[in-house]
Length: 172
Image (cartoon, rainbow, N blue to C red):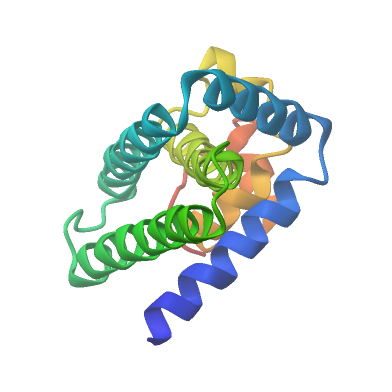
């Protein structure tokens, strides 16, 4: 139960970081529009793909930092995250069906938020793996908090790492 609470707090932190930036709002709107037109089944598939891609990038970031990629904490965190996301999606599907809502708009909104969280996390991991990644360099300043949280360092140290001032990626 403590692991689920930790994941929920982490989700809250990511959402607050994302929606404090224009990039976060643009990404949220874009993901919602794509999911809206794709339908809720495609939205659920998008969640699965985003979680898997985030996991792959997260493992790559852990390997780059010299940590064991498949630690017990990582495995339990992945399963807890899948369980939390699946519970939220299934819960909203059931609520919509019981209420007789045919639009599935809440499921699409929940899936969009989950995709946004996972893409944000994936971008942070990708910047840890390669701080010079061209497309993500645009977002390095807004992703500094995400990188700092993943690396367990200060935001200033994360900014220095992303700007190329320090090649050290270990916890300070």
